[in-house]
Length: 107
Image (tube, rainbow, N blue to C red; front, side):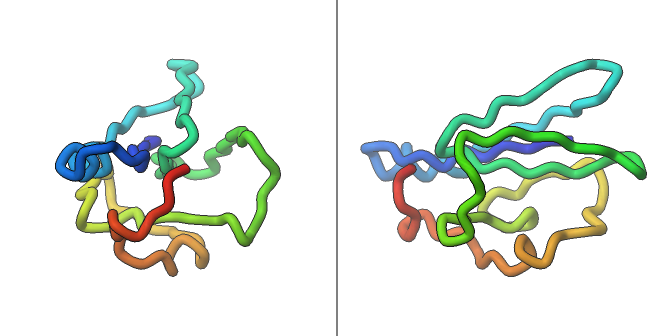
């Protein structure tokens, strides 16, 4: 399953927080041939539902460690309903702190 979170800022504070908390999830399989586009300003994460799954994704720029940003899969602000327990999280992704909607730069 692939989840996407909207992180772009809005001009109104209440609209901004509502937008930031929104998420959507889709099951992407070889059988359904679906893809998901996450535009700039949206975070994304994925959970593989089968062993030995290959995931391919494209980015608009080369990886730059100093520009890396992220949020934890279990951040309480987003309350994402993953379809099963998350068993493996990368070391980098496990170090992200709780999301602070006031501390993010606009992308």
